[in-house]
Length: 458
Image (tube, rainbow, N blue to C red; front, side, top):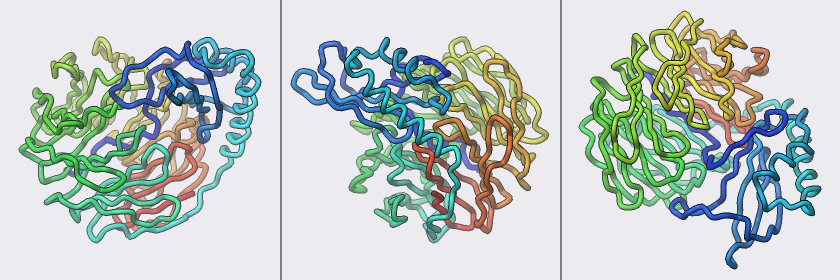
């Protein structure tokens, strides 16, 4: 395929519960548990330690049935202006572990987070390492959720795991017989890696040991996109054979084949609850499927050219699609009806994404510009102009305070999504940058280029 598939690493993924707190602070409550274990009530529990989780959350330790467990509350929309007292009251309504006697401790921790965020707003990125990662060209890069390591795929038929802190290679995943094109961690767990190849197979690996657990065979053409569901029980693969397949991570078996597209599948994405998946195709359509049955629920018809990118928002209510027809479309994920057509680009839309609260949409285009839209009003709220070539990748940092773009002009840029102002230009690559990502804290960036290097910025 001419272009990199639309799948991109998403640093924050486990979203069993969401609410909206004061100041628009989106909360995410995610009990740390094995993917298959049932969710239990925390009402009969005793809260132990409360601590910070990176930049954007707190972790609650509690004892239940004699077993120590942890639960994280992620505050992805916390800002220096958030009313922390009111926010904690909002959290307490949904989280019985935080009793009145622990309220002040939680307020103190979130105030510390606020202070960190103020420093984060002014963060400048500097080149930390240049990695000549592979003998042959790179295809994709992806972080694990913690940002402690990342992976690179290559035309040399391998995937490599790298330590972010040192820039050292940890291990090489070998076994594919052709280009390793699509790669992903099973975030938020981060203990497994999936690789999709032009050899028509997908492999599942241990991130810790590099052992290959399964080789998934069945596609009759190149695999160009893949994704784990957020529960880490399934892998979805999309292929040039016009089908997508769902695979069981435990036993390595094919669960269901999704058929109905009339051209290559170039993008796919699970919703956060794991009961729906979307596939975007060169046949100009996106299809919404029921994960449990493989049944086609909706065909999103409206684009007049190939689909480049497709994504659910976090609460699973909306789908955004980008197309070579120069438009981005917003759809109701439940009914499959079109909500809006977002116009303004003069050339193909190459990538689209929601921010982590689902309130904004960012688009990047072959016209060299990017745009930010309000998901509720459907209005363009910022134009990001300055790149000298097409922008193949775009993403928000987890906090939503910055946008990162990767371009054929050999640079990546950081933008303020509120004003559209370019904050920083990351220069140094000698060829097109086709892949870029933030870690979950938003304080490290990786860029992958056709110059065959991967750069770590921090």
